[in-house]
Image (cartoon, rainbow, N blue to C red):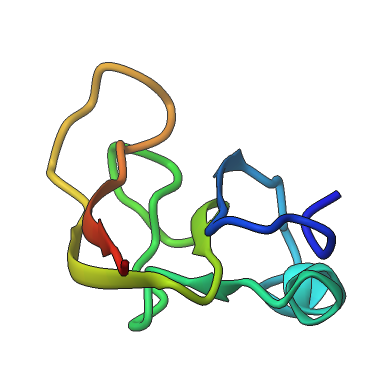
Length: 88
């Protein structure tokens, strides 16, 4: 579905990649998506993040202006915040 999309795409969520980003690599490669979290910042567990389990993946046509993970502990995962623009 993503590869056939004619407009820019964002896929976000908890991907449960407990063995690192290599688990999501094939999905990203096949779909043409890239991570907004270019630094690989961890988001889990919220009290003391050590693992990158949550992702915001963007397609071509989307410019990521800012990405951050605030120190919020309302869940077992910290939230991801991504400011972006869709190119015309």
